[in-house]
Length: 357
Image 1 (tube, one colour):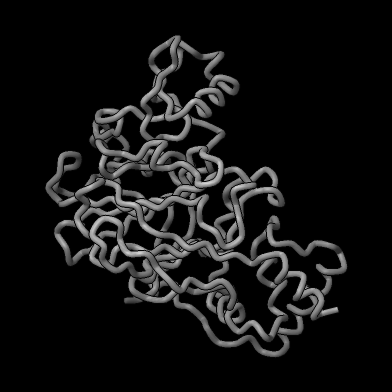
Image 2: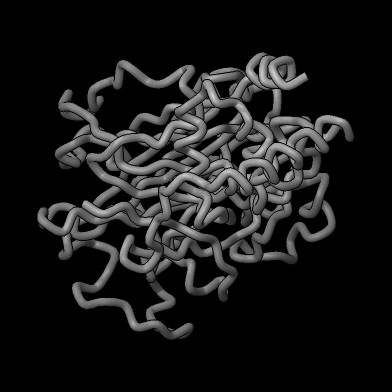
């Protein structure tokens, strides 16, 4: 199976609604199964207990299986910087949802790419969702009783930042929120379109990268989280001992803006030889084996409008593992899958600095 690459692009917001089965970053999740969506208890951060916020989703059907005619994998992350712990995944939640072609929510025929097509296909027809983040919302504003919330923390946030001035005026659909990440479409390009160049750079190119690396050291700009993640990658290019990182850099060099690598059944493109996953938990739904499906690249951090890139969550790569059979959900319509967060920890950066001084 060829490796597919994903890139972010701006598009009209209506194209990113559930009725069009989008792959997307930011905004609220475009739920596939609209009746049985996850709530706060499903999305609580392991460390602080706050509900994790939608990061991205990938539309990835198994064409060979009728039960996965529609299939989406969702990624959520805790926004609290203190919960981002090196090579730990407790601040991340992954869910898989899938539907047969004949289902309760969508017509059997493909959607028509028009803004006014089937606007009745909306999660609010099936479930109450949080006005702030879009997950299941069992609570509502006690005053207007129109706007719903998943948790007290989001209700308090909304009251302080907007709802206090609009209570009784705004509707449940008027829900744009600065709390969420900026919304983008994820455009997938096949390996035939975005052919990877894995050849080693010539010596002249290597020398230029070393000069840039040393200049950044002298200017004090070396850091894991930077305004440009690609510069962070170049900072470690001089470490000849880390062949894993050298391979990582070569694989992405031709398409440095890629935020996704989809390689179902393939191998993770690790960013470091340290802290690689060795024990993948089995599917909690069927107890079957999981396999690698895709990874989210550090370049995505460039598009999230993080207010403080130094004191924020971070990752090297997010490697997502899903049930190999993509089993039919029985216990829960949104099946929890597994993600491994591999980081470049500060000790490794300091080691590289010491080796080049």
